[in-house]
Image (tube, rainbow, N blue to C red; front, side):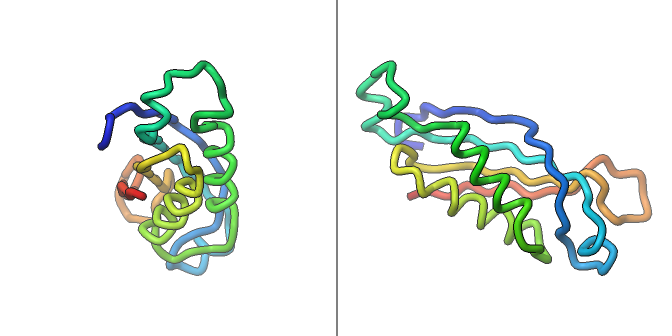
Length: 122
């Protein structure tokens, strides 16, 4: 990534209804989200100690939560794409990596999570 400076946000836990199965779309289940916010070159070059000229990670968390808690999606890939697009609306970011994990995936084995990780650039 340009500059390489990033803000790391780990372990945002939310309840939501996403998945292909009927039960997944009816009953809320736990999801976990991680975000890597890659700062635009203008932010890393300024080195100002001022929230107004950098990415606001509280705002990124809020927009990610709104997507996750919003209308149901079938695929984790779609969910991650929509989170990335919403977070990248912040002009102080050049890219974002989004990880979305379903913490109780509907599989017949003992699996801690099923997830997807994507990186999108402006």
